[in-house]
Amino acid sequence: MRVVVLGATGRLGRHVVHECVGTGHEVVAVTRGEPPADGHGTVRWATVQPEDVEAHHRLFSQADGVLDARNQRYDDWSRYPAMVNATLAALRDTRARYVYVDNLYAYGVPATSAPVDENTPRRPVSVKGQIRRDIERGLIAAMTTHPVTIVRFPDFYGISTDPLPASLRWFGPPALSHQFIHVPDAAHAVRLILEDPTAAGEVWHVAGAAPITGYQLRDVARGITGRPTRLTVMGRGLVRVLGLISGPARGLVETQYLWETPMFLDASKFGSRFDTRFFHTHREALREIMEGEFRSGRQAALSTPG
Image (cartoon, rainbow, N blue to C red):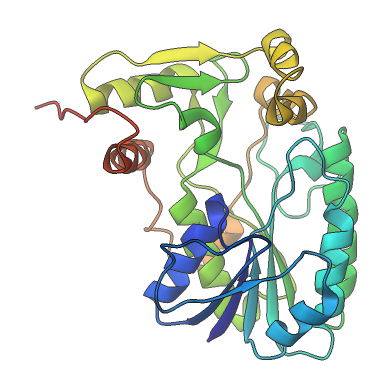
């Protein structure tokens, strides 16, 4: 397949590019800035601004699929709707299947403790949730004339694990569970969905290992390193103070309810269609994250308990 990856230098986009190249697809990687100097040699890079319909249309008209892994600044999503609308406009008169990566903000506060499936009503309680709901409405309308697909993920581990192995960050009561997915697993899932033409025109929930508490995740990290790992609990008060100087922290304030009233995605629909044995366990994911940090020289070496 000829695949266009939007947001190719982002946390998910980098893995999507690697995943698609590794399975033999011809990849055009799109970024709004300069392409990376160490980019994969078989990838064609293109610099395109998010609302440039004509430039995107030229790329899409030669593609079999488009994977949209883009994001906006976490403290300002005001340009998100225009970006997606421009993408939908650029898809007109093309045959490219479009896969849009989403999160769970549109669901709002869960009505029960049961996992939410793809048919759960959207009742957003935040600005970010309202934006995501409105974008989804446009995408569902577009499904009537184009093969559009929505893939919804929980948090990536990175929000809590970027400081590893020194510490873990937790943004609510550490005895409550939270749902994560390993970024390479998310990239693998969107590639599978893109490749299956019968998956188009639907919403898909994809989740990784079972939900886990902050204390449990800390113990997993300790078991990998063989030494203490600090659990840093960042409650509402601390996040609000950090928001005075940090854009990401300002953006987190309105969605921190998801750490205080946990919501879990029901991914049984995905599991009934696709082989899910590629999902990492929490231990496997954390070890891979830490080994990546060690290879980059940003963290201390790991020790392996006997």
